[in-house]
Length: 323
Image 1 (cartoon, rainbow, N blue to C red):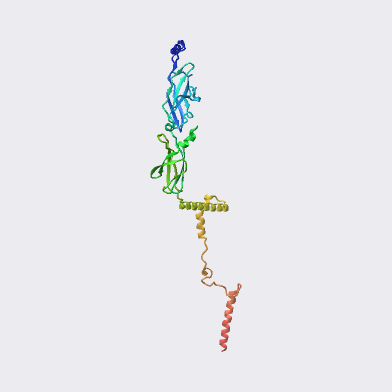
Image 2 (tube, helix red, strand yellow):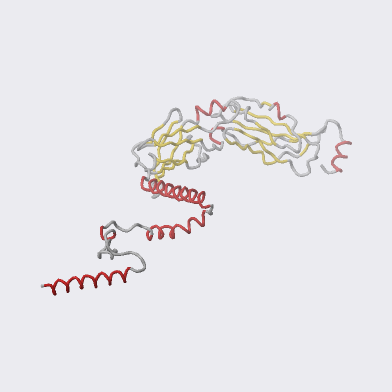
């Protein structure tokens, strides 16, 4: 308030009451049936000014104060009216007034408000599991605090679900109730489907959808060939490591050296293989030249042999001459 106006108020008669400027932009912001009233102070409002809040149920005649919002300071400028708007389908209004030590402003009214229709409904919680050629679906509605925590389960019990098949993005929609578990049937087995859900309330178009929750209608097929090849690869690797460890423990070689020496070991084994068994390898083709058992032994063996030959010739001549 300008200083001149303040001085004028001091000199005027006490019957004349000086007023503050009324608050601006009185609005109700609601999410999941939790309602917060917001406003702005008028330009030039003193920092020591406070605000009070009243609400009106349109089925009643008089305004009622909100007990916890009768002296709101300039730093807050908001009031939680969730508990005051206790009936979700009824009409309500709120008003705000600024006041000081000796002044007060006119009331500023909000627009009419129906909780269940004007609130922004958050996404529900969705749980999807596969069951053969179907999906098992469980949906939990968004909840609010205060009395609406119980009322929300009664009012927010219908949902619209969009079922999309992965790959070709084929989609269809259906209505689901959260009172029991729901089965989405007649689906293609072994295919992934993604489900998105949103609360369905008549005359409320502010419902937010959930994030897609995906699941297979049945477990994906098990690739036996891939598993067998993997097992064989692991077995071969373990065999190579075992052989390397065995050879290294005997020759005190490192594993890389053992692996590099494997080709040479194989070649040595091939060259060292025994020849096939044959009698030709045992019996010689020609008889060996063994000495005669009657041959004389000693250094004069040749001379004695010549003398024996001469004696034999002499005996022959003597016999011939006698005849």
